Length: 231
Image 1 (spheres, rainbow, N blue to C red):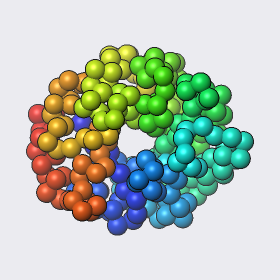
Image 2: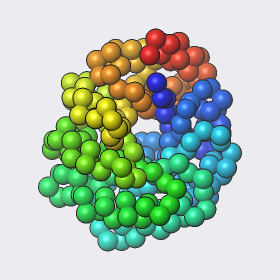
Image 3: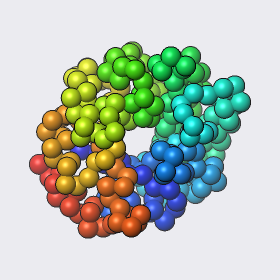
């Protein structure tokens, strides 16, 4: 079971690694659902950690619809991350005015990643789409590109409330390989077993569920990994 943990600064990223995280997602602005962190911070965190670091690329928190200026910012951030950091992947997602995935913008980003070392996680923009399961099915057509995984709560406020959709999405992944599913939102040590039994996902994403008073907590990490021993 792969455990990804959100970090917002270098100290948190180092603690996440120390406490046992397998991968870090680096973001800014927890309360906005995650925005692009400072590019220099991204470089520092990627240099300091031994585990993979995925970096959020999201120019604003209003929604997941981006205009030409927004995409210019996205392109610039990807160029920096590709040329000046050891980031493992970017975390990006875009929707159109019809509340479906903006595949044109997705393919533009994938084109930028083709010649780089960066992979792509499509983030929880998919949970705002009209048909989360249908969109995940469509994203499976991008297996073999830089698109590696999709972070989702199954279209609900929490992953536990979205277990039916998450289970359906997990079943869409071909055994021979496909775009993976990363379950996140509201995941905690106390509910992780129920989530995994009901969805069969192989990667989980945690943020506030491993924090006490907004600080990463070693005891919660220990409880999490104890509960994951059978998976």
